[in-house]
Image 1 (tube, one colour):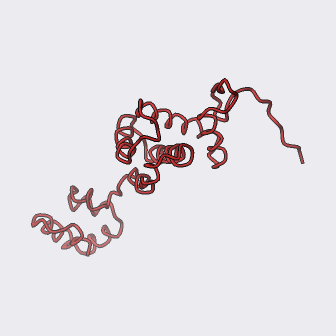
Image 2: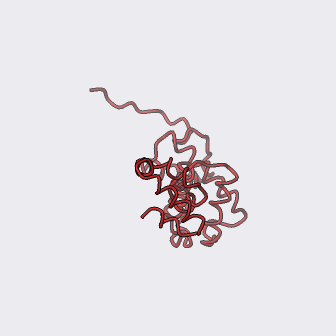
Image 3: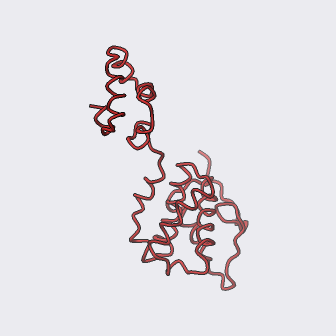
Length: 179
């Protein structure tokens, strides 16, 4: 069994970026954030993205201090940032995680403790194709094609597709078709 290798202190942080220490020698906020990421078990290759998301947030909130932010300002950042940067679902959840660590654990901002982080994390997920808000815009044929169960039922009983068309024409709730 090999002894673990100890890397010399190169002056770079765990994300591989150069962040100078304060003149007093105390770690800067970004050094403390990187140390927090390491403690929380964030993968080394993801740390630079966490830092990037946190830096983007801080830049967007300037000139306000993190401790002065409101719940509304924090939550309003996410949809705008996701849209402007065309984030995937995973990148959006990563952004939520990065900012939760920054605001709750590191900055200990009062408003951040009131944010519903789990709801924010879930709001970044794309809706399933069968979700009623998306499926309502589909034709009955497209809805049937998207579900193997419905395909088998429609093949065995063509009357079901006709019923689905009628229900849609009469503007019945989509859930009525599924019963």
